[in-house]
Image (cartoon, rainbow, N blue to C red):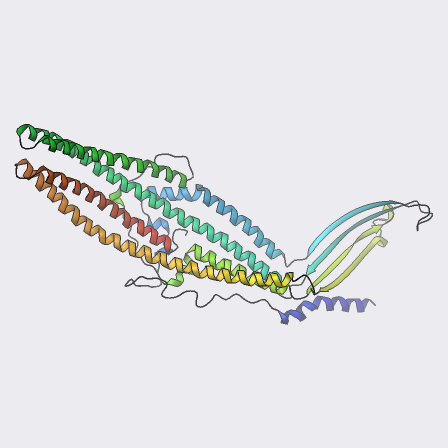
Length: 465
């Protein structure tokens, strides 16, 4: 009899291996057509295996103060800290997925007391006490890959949270750098405007003297005075922008509003080569693309889980322990009990719930694939936009430099002609105003070049390393 029981147990235990050949869960394979070599519209820009996204932000941004602010932001920014907690939660689910292969074990201790009626089935017995101490063990065989697919779905969800954290880091690094460079450009514009105000104050004095000499009229004096006020109004606007940007920077750094220490605009140089790499690098560099693929993998594995519900579930359960009617005999060998049950459950009719879940899972998988493709398309657009904008800003700097030199020279010549009574004062005012606007525009173009460098770095997935 004992030999027959052992054979039965071995047969039940070997069933998972006998059914392994019926394994139905599919292995994930990345769609081969998901990335096109034409993902980047870069015209004559060459593409190779290198990408500036692989460069650490510490190497890209060499300003020590900017490096300090980025480090501070990565440590204290609220969104970044929330993302870290989401990673911790996802890690817990991954551990749960790995533990699903293991059997579950529950312990129980029980004492029961019953009072019987005199006319009941236990006639002559007024009461009954029972003591029990035992454990229940159950295990589900992963015949169809349901547990494995669930585990991989948890892992894909974890990768999404990691990618989300990387995306926050990338965005945060680019935002801090952009605000910092914008502050520096405004500082430069403030410096230029203050110099202009000083020059126009002297010009007003000169104009008043020319009026006394009869070279110009009161109209010229008032126009010069109005031009001075225009420059002072520009200075107020610039200082307001600086104040608001400093408050924005403080929020990015996770601290109350405060002034921001910074260096000079002219000292900023980015020497890293603007290499975009091949489109396939977006799959490993850009966090939103990584997250989109992870969502697709999760949907793929959950479809496997939904499909496995059509097939039988093989379970093994065992229980054992001590049971006695008298506590004095509780720890006696005669109080031992045990049981072993093997079960095979096949769903037959369940109100179409399993089929509905499978169809929903397939639809969600297709949605995730489409979102994956959409994310890649947007990523390619971002790279193309940033690259072209950087090139345009670089070309514009050359034009703005020539424009400023022309206006500045015209302003000097017109002032000299006016002093000798050979020019109309309106020409001087126009030349001075054009020179100021051109110089401020030049600074703005130089800032745009830095801004689009940052945008390209972010578009390629840089900043989280």
